[in-house]
Length: 106
Image (cartoon, rainbow, N blue to C red; front, top):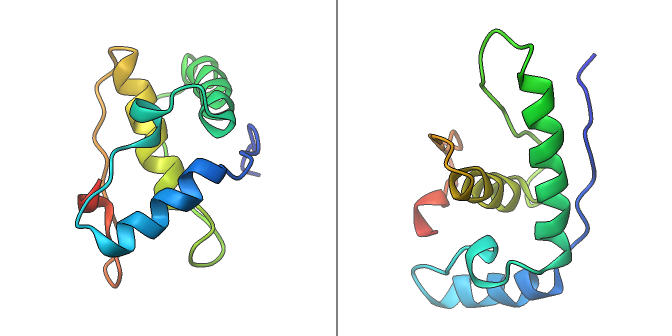
């Protein structure tokens, strides 16, 4: 059984930013530009839950996965990594999408 820590609501700001991404080569990360967004607040609560879950873990590896394309895996990954980094945690974000990876655009 895999634990589910929270759900993240859709961000209207992020949806408009995705339209910009289609036109530009890169966009700023939402956790940096709009830190008061409801989705970012939700990710902060996930960060806290993960922090306490990892205190008894053997390692500190987190994997973000989803059942289908365009469900928010990249959004969650980049913004959660940013939130951890803002809290002075070391972060290594790996884009394992070999077909349509675009994490390098953030």
